[in-house]
Image (spheres, rainbow, N blue to C red):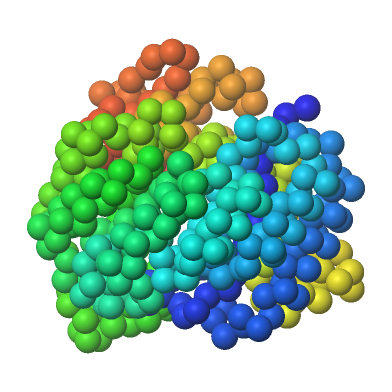
Length: 381
């Protein structure tokens, strides 16, 4: 039976970051234990359907999972072990905000079985951190890495964000330089996406914060990322992710390969047995449903023809190793060229093949969005 991954959503925050449009809630810290109990009920309920699967990765995301106590995290992990067959070498990741960490909790998380920590650093410039509403300072981020090492974490990721309001290429280089000096095993380097309805979007539109970097500056930032990570021994294995050898995030690869995963918690989505399911986004809706007032999981609408095929390409081409052609042909009856003949011919110089995979060249990765738009237009045309 195919192994699965489990995602646990912890939608608690001290305060919402100015750029965030994820499902998360500030001001509910007193309800932490009630929420954890709801997650445990859901895990036990889902085990009736999926408990026979082996679990290769677990990821606690948010929100801010590090607002949970060590005992609460241990309760979640113990329930996963009791309800599913957790691999001995499972990758178990927990996201954390540097402003919420304590030595005691870090040690407790490690004892509970968390073996990978992903810290939302975003920037190592205090002014930029204030601009985007982070609750920590650069020094607190550095201290968080040191505390994590002391607690025994040997697999650390740092999330970094470029394209912030008023950010210069030099500021990005300084953040990257300081981050590399901390020697994490993994770096996620994302460009800011100005999401509609967020406070940061409103501030940019109103001119009440510095303007976003121009395209030339963004291209310089991307070049700096590639050069500085490579020089420090990181391999770019996905468009925004860089890892030391053997340290690529196994859980995220599940998403990019379109493999099965079970999402648990408020607003969590799943893709299991060829079907997509989701939980309610509202706090009270989730808490009520988890008590069994009605069926917790809702099935999404049927995939439109070709949707799964395009998703496989869209996600797979994000990775440096690309799309598994044999698996694609097995699942969809023919290879990518059969479904996108015009795009594959016209953009052929941006693709390359090797080891049974179709991938983008370095230039192709730089213009990936344009490639995908053309493929989608051909599919829908």
